[in-house]
Length: 143
Image (cartoon, rainbow, N blue to C red; front, side, top):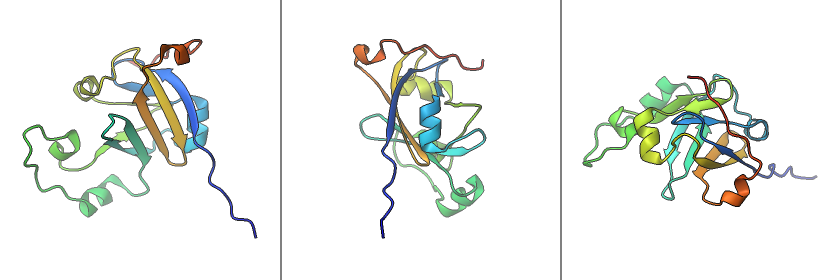
């Protein structure tokens, strides 16, 4: 009996639309299965990349399961300050981070991005190689 291998990750390049607006190109939406209305948990990795993972439970259940009692650090992360994990809702084909958070992460308008789509997960990172961005169209996001 054959075991089914998970699909290989899909990688594309894009740009930040408005500050903090990350649009998901069709190949990323297809690979991740993430669609409008889905709730995504945001995690910032050590290398600065963002991991957006589809929540399989309601935000309320998540807050009850993973309560945050407080933070002892001087510069508390957004999720800690909000009393729970950072959660974003997918628009038509994008997510938007709060402007202050986006600026702190370098997600300014027209910043080049590398997106990797896997089932129920999208990893987003700033992309430093200009040659990879040749022919990639700028994106617009709703105001």
